[in-house]
Length: 358
Ligand code: PMP
Image (tube, rainbow, N blue to C red):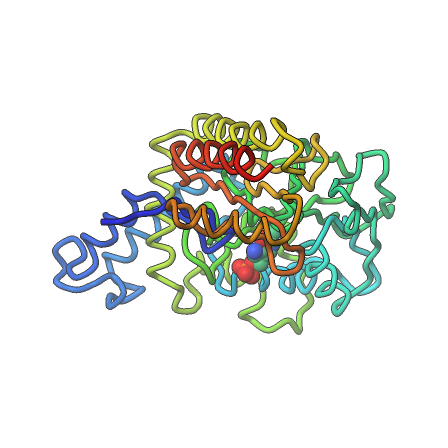
């Protein structure tokens, strides 16, 4: 079996043992004689999976009782819309921090729903950076404050979160459960699963239940957080296989421990940043204090060299290193499941490539 080091930004590499278990279970799920994909979402077999997924993510996030944990279809992009539809009442303002391409998409959607104030804008800063807490122009009485904990394209990551009077909401798509954090600092967090916790097309959402009660009465049932809270994410037929995979990843996270996962993530990122900093040949595109542990973005002296870099890396078993099509350059996404050996292999390759071509 040829498993390569997968640096894709998402969908992204998953723990091998999770994939192996899913493979073992595929045709006959735990003696049921059928795949979980073919099982009823109201049946015993799926019920146990669903309950464990909810319990494990509650545990991983240290969710107090007044928070709900939901699995919702449509990925993070659906949350860009559901958030203002539910939490931004007419006449109120939501504060959004514009930090790059993903924040911008969240903002665009919120503007279709209600009043938005841009509390800070570092979206076009070069090198990429995030605003300092003192830079934020927050609206008194805002419905909520939204930020993007990790900008997947720009390669920036909030290291500490601002204290806000209004509930803080974070799009954690590209760094969810890559490090410990205090959920009580947030009114809501959401994340497309396809980077750190599962397959694409589904989002993990954790929110304070009282916030869900703000939704206007004419909001369609399927778009209401309240519906999914009341039905424990089983109002509709949920993406059962995706939730099953997320459950397996949650077991892997619990087994390893979030502190250990975080320490390994720091170590992986440090290896690659050290290779960048060791020579003038590479230029990191994010300001050092905001550099992401998840998406490491950098440039080489020329585009042809970048192309050659990506090609040669691929020949050596490292794929997915091409930068996002909107910005070019190189991007190494080093999510939870990327093995340490993958980060080491890339760092070694970088030193060798710079030596040969610098
Ligand atoms: N937010 C961030 C930070 C992302 O990186 C992405 C996807 N790359 C999204 C939102 C959108 O996620 P989805 O494709 O699941 O809608």
